[in-house]
Length: 139
Image (cartoon, rainbow, N blue to C red):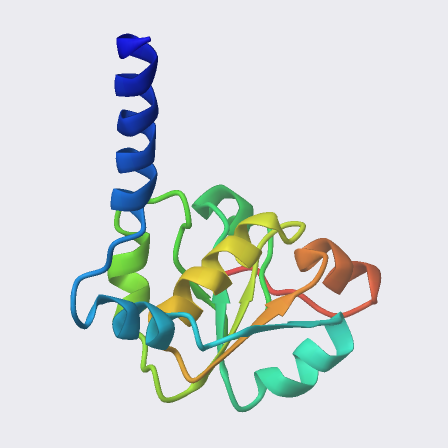
């Protein structure tokens, strides 16, 4: 009985301690998550790309096979991805893509949390782009 009571109090204490907040902590979290990511189809992505930063988050090998003209390549799997991405101007819209959309969706969420002004994601990645008949370049 004594062990059950101690276990119950331990669980209760653990649950309650997880919910405590320090002053100012919740405000920072709310501000960091207020930015949203907008998914775009290839045509809308292309239209927005003229005025925005286009970010390719694929590996260097993938980029070598072809990329969207003017895109900046920062490997999402690189250990310094976020550091390099933070060097981009936060006051400009940023359009993110990868091969099929999984990495770029994650990268876009990271950038939104970092406070970038407008973050857009290419649904379906460069595969959707080429399937829509849009051009790529090799550099």
